[in-house]
Length: 538
Image (cartoon, rainbow, N blue to C red):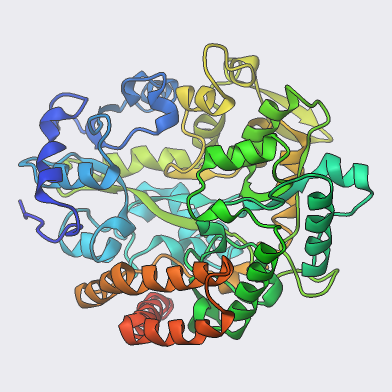
């Protein structure tokens, strides 16, 4: 058995010992492969599931899958409180490995390619056509062709190897977050949803006049140059976040002219009293409180964890309370921003088959079930007559969750009810079915937000970097930049926004960031992207 030594070196040896497999749920770490029908499967439990379940073996979805396939799975879960990375390191340091590992392989040092090179998981290329026809169809077949093979591009390592069964964002919905405002107040004041900086300024001024102490509230990530997915007012200045693409060239947001203009605008709003200056330390609870208690009129957040969480609490006091989504800001009214929050067609969260698995073919064939029609229904909706019913609406078949899910008796939310019985999102398989979203999102405002924030999600794909893998040398440089240059540049940015420093100091801060390694970080990202794209030639 090949020992892996290059795994997430930034975590301590103490963490490795603390999360050892001896403390994992699920008992022994490996079953005898006498008939190819029993496998061990390591995974961190979804927190929505662990509220009501002690192990995935208790979940209806997995129990039903065993009935349909005849394959029994012994799940191994990290001890409660262990982070995914710490638990993974602990598992990898053990003397025995499970047959399958569900993990975000971008978190493996060197990424999925290094995991393959280190023999942590096997490449599936020689198996998927015969033993995983459903998955193969998304990668190499008709479904892959229809999507310009973006599933394959996003779900393979640098040399074009399939390293596992990935989360596939198959549905049309790719964006789930953006700016939102109090819709009831817009109606009361006769105002439209803001699109431009001038319109946002007018809304903030009106809110301030009407007694909203901090018109816009958020956390630091909403304003930061870091984080490519969190787009807010920067889009009005034709600039993205973090590293992103202009054609085949990787650019860094903080270097762009528009980003300086964006910072200056935020500083002007702070000076006018329009922005909650506690954004540097705000957490979700603080933001939710500001929105629900008429302190703030607008923020940034997700369909479920922001709009879906704030509205029920606020409506208990104010039945008219409403939160509505706004388009990503633009320079001129009627335009559509080219920068939008967007998920890629596949994520690096995947179920990998390990060399220790006694029957690759059976394991691969078993997991492929989730990428077919019946498996998709089981994973997203459960069992017909129990957790969902089928209805014909306008000539189309739709899946409707039963009261068991929508009323979530004994549980705190629809999410907890869904994840008690199945794993409908962010787990390897088919994600983002329209009926799942409509069942999960209980308010009309949420369902509309999905439409508003997805107006140009497909067009935004051209700007979004895929998950990239770095060499050890590149990773060392990048890590040092994140530890030294990133915090310094962020402090400089926030000092300008809060009025502690002039916008004239930004150029010097960027120059210092370059001297402290950001040019190298940018070059490394370009090199990693070029390697990623070279898969198209293989």
